[in-house]
Image 1 (spheres, helix red, strand yellow):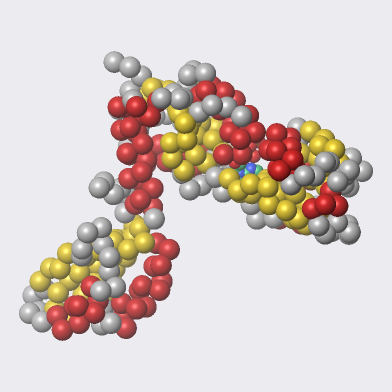
Image 2 (spheres, helix red, strand yellow; image 1 turned 135 degrees about the vertical axis):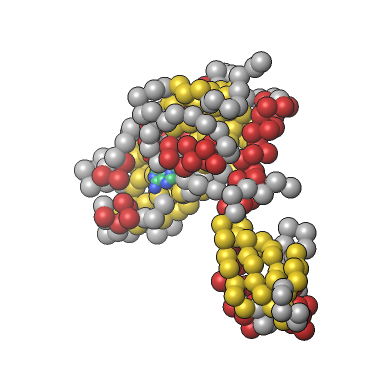
Length: 283
Ligand code: ATP
Ligand code: MG
């Protein structure tokens, strides 16, 4: 039987969440920091642990069938791969930042200026689109210190909270791209049954993460008002209670409007509200 290979980051910002996602998909494997390859005992899959920069090409060339990597790395390496699924972690933006004592306030002022970055391809395309011609200085790391050293007038780097920029006296100036971790596959891999099975498992884990399981009690006379607030996967389950005028309602609600819904439900007469995490939702 065929064995798929999936490439994930060996260590760094995406490693932990990538391992957690695969484990939540029910995949059993050892996560030894020393090994480069780890077989999955209960699915025909091997996990390759790589530098994130190498993942797009491994997938493009079919050495790995699948990969988990930031969109920024895919765009920068300009590979031909299939985007299979956004994964909701590793969120960040590629931004141009300037020293906070700088007079640069509009994009045009970057004309002729030196911008240090580890993302010359993405930055080059962005500047070209905006009709700006800057001197792109490609460096391999610690981009944020380059204006202080007099190496550049601005930088283009990944930002999540902005803390690193701030502590280096830089302020974000323009958004070049936003990024998150994605599942990619070799071209055509999406037609493979095993790949499809894995995508389904990942989607069921992601759906579950976005929702909470809610159980509450309500008097029958308030049931309509309460169920009107609950979409559920299809419709809420209503279970009779020993006390005849009361029922228990079971449903799932989206995490994002969780607090709003809970207070609305209380107002509509819900009591004893219990909220639980969900492991998987299979539609
Ligand atoms: P490797 O050793 O695998 O080459 P790296 O040092 O290039 O790792 P990390 O810093 O671990 O990469 O970042 C991996 C990915 O995490 C980035 O490509 C990006 O998609 C995402 N990311 C999320 N937030 C940030 C952030 N604040 N800074 C940098 N990357 C971030
Ligand atoms: Mg890297």
